[in-house]
Amino acid sequence: MIGDGTSGIERSVERTLGHLRTLDGSGEQEETTEAPLRLEDLYRQQQMRMVRLAILLVDDPATAEDVVQEAFTGLYRNWAQLRDAKAAVGYLRTAVVNGSRSVLRRRKTAREYQPPHQPDARSAESLAMLSTEHQAIVTALGHLPRRQREVLVLRYYGNMSEGEIAEATGVSKGTVKSTASRALEALQKHLGTS
Image (cartoon, rainbow, N blue to C red; front, top):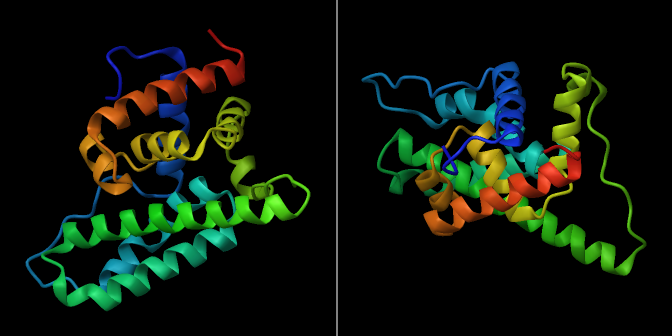
């Protein structure tokens, strides 16, 4: 668990992103069998989970699908160098996070040359499946700085440990912990809860 104590906002974020994880059917990793893992199997097992992760990071389903497609393309190019299935999933997560960062950087650059615009609205289906509290938290996540949003999404939606988040984002475990704390405080202020 990130942080020493569990605040109300942390429980809300955990419930919301855990609820989304459950709705997406992306619980714990599927058990690997004795048979060698094939790229097709990994795609079937992880594609939707990675798309949902990217959607939470870039807030646009079409862009998220592109990010995940690029991640799988990179995995295909590096397939021979991977040690095992766990390494492949880690590679995908890192590629999705880095691809999402690139998309957000390009958006920021584009906004500098054009008037700012509102981010694309979430699909009606995804919002209809969430309670008002969950909707508010997902919306508030979109207002956090990139790194804070990444850390919370990877922790509570990706169900990743601090070490896994540090590896996927390229920062230290201490940075993950402090970023999560600042992100939860910012969410609390944004939602006006105490």
